[in-house]
Length: 621
Image (cartoon, rainbow, N blue to C red):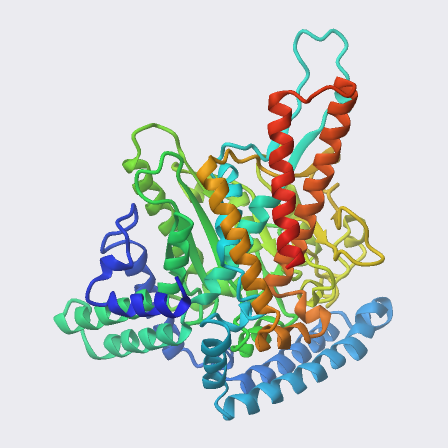
């Protein structure tokens, strides 16, 4: 289904919502849609009542830039007030303040001026026109590869389904048999699996969520904001306006729902956090009655056409995290924290994004449980969600309720989020208990500039104690890093590296492997046809002017795009399959001494070869 057809289907569903909303475990008037629209009302109310510059900055790019400069300067001046000796005793922080941040501010000023002029010239209409003409309606985030959600996405999801369903354990604790007389405990490992099929599939989900029509959400927000001012919440007029807003939200998500249906999933937006039409939390989940249900919580970050969001979140100010993470949990980036968690400073007018997320997850999971015949617990695939949300889940897994099991998180292109104390508190949660069954994988693409901001020196545990809590360089990453490398000189196979894993368990062995999928004959033929179609689309995309224009972006910018992440993951995937094929051939050749392979080994080898050719074909195309 094309994006244009999907949007037309969504528009036609205003009078018949069932055409977009398939019957599901979450479909009822009081579930995700109704909750989401009510959440939009709370956000609009908070913005209307607030007189803060921060709220104004989220709606105006010039104000956002001025706010960025003022906040950065205020943070530095406050540091001088509380710690004047830092100029001498923290020279790196002083150097960053006097040299690095002015350079960043100058670059942002040029970008802001360009975007502001572009908006005055009707930038949104130009973007929409180009998208409709050359990218089949996809948003600017996915212009670099218009075929990203084509047939290969169906194959990628099929490969990951076993892990999503919980059939494949991603953390395995090795144990010594009780019958062993002289056990060697020092040789034991906690095997943590970074699943390539899962990483590719969750990247697709986190890219697809950007395809919501934010203009329709803006319109829905204005409708419910006006209704709140004019009508009583129990009046028929308010109910009618609420229905109008809900219809617009359904229409805005039509493309996402259509693509999710191709993968056998359903989608619902959950919360816009603090800005209508900005960052979004949504869930992809299995339909009612699925034998092995799962939920993927996915976050949409900053929209490129709303650069003021990036400026608002790019400040270097930090805030205490003790309310949601406990005493001694350090400081966290103020912009990201306030996007997700309600603060006491907000009184009763702030938006509670995290609360909406948790309550929706509980409700959907409970209805899934009621729809099942067995007694298995639903599993929550907490993938690609914001690191802060996952950190809170680790801190209080009880938030998810009795019907959800927390699993691994996969985050792409994430910046540094907190100071060294906050990173240590997060790592303490990861190793409590020592062999915890879930972990956060932080996937970092080669030279992705977003992963390098804000600049920080708190990544290494050994250097955290030497950093002042007020230092603007006291920022650190969260999670176990998987850094993707391009298949070009000077890099060599396997084109990835695992970084800083010791903090999560000193004896961790990480395997990058695929999930073996049992494909029937007709599915094999279908995948071959899909591969040919995908290759044709990739060849046509090579002549696509938008894809070509995106390829001209500087590497640090281009490497933040989903298509770049997917291409690098495909490179690792192809290499891993080829290496697995070589290992099997070598092992079986030595075992049989030139004889024929066993039926099981032969079938496995053929499957690996088929997947390697398929991935190599995509990359070659």
